[in-house]
Image 1 (cartoon, rainbow, N blue to C red):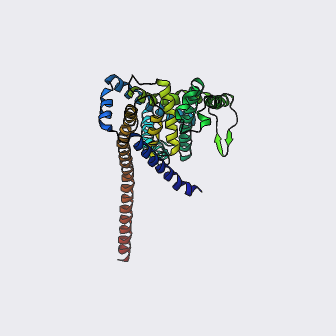
Image 2 (image 1 turned 90 degrees about the vertical axis):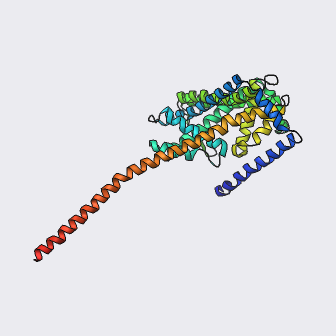
Image 3 (image 1 turned 45 degrees about the horizontal axis):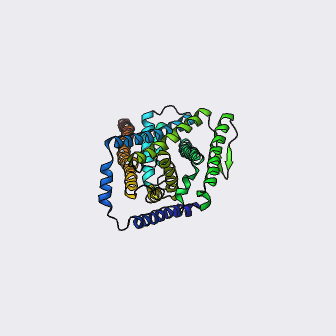
Length: 350
């Protein structure tokens, strides 16, 4: 069954990309996009570019905090902020672009953290806790938004079942999400037994770990949504809470679709959920998001990976040289001893 899913999920991801790109093509068919995109890009003020870049830095700093929280949970204290930050940055930059099933982040993290003495089991716990931190933040912010503004999901009419886009149902869903988050925190404080759901085992962390999760995850999502918010024009900007809600729904759907980088899925959902804002300007804001949050980090992460692997290779070669020299000296000593033994026998014979 697992081998079958290994083939099915990539196919599902590619199919989601194709369908979404076809829908985007139909949405913009007959329009000359480039002049509009160029005007929209040019209209973004330097101050808003600076705020969008600052939002990106906030998002990736929070992602680095995910790793530090997980390391604290494991009781690992020999990993610096710089190392954890670079590892987290590289992991998410690759995973966001390539797709979670192809490159979940476990491989990069294991390669990096094993150099710091972490076992495969510890890295598995770290990856799981980082993923759950993101899910916890999404549920917390999503619950707050649905309770505060339950009509948000009505923007996805036609994509979601009518029952979910109903404001009353959305309000109830929001309460349910907040109840789950509250249960998690209560379980952490009371040190309840692990929660097991269909084979999934949820270990309640210490309260200080849960508190850090409750700060780091929303901070990352607020930063990521802030990139789009600051790239949108002020005249047709629906407000930060609307942008945040649409971002959470679109980004989550893109992750669930398994499409590499959420390509197409994220864009079509976001554009459909922003009918009052000109489509070209929404598309421009999403391209700014992809540039700052996905493409540039991917390029930097590839440099980091090459530099890390080069340093590891250098360390391996430096470690092997003394061993090789020792073996060579040992072989030379054995040869000398053998010669002495032969010469001694010759002397005895004489």
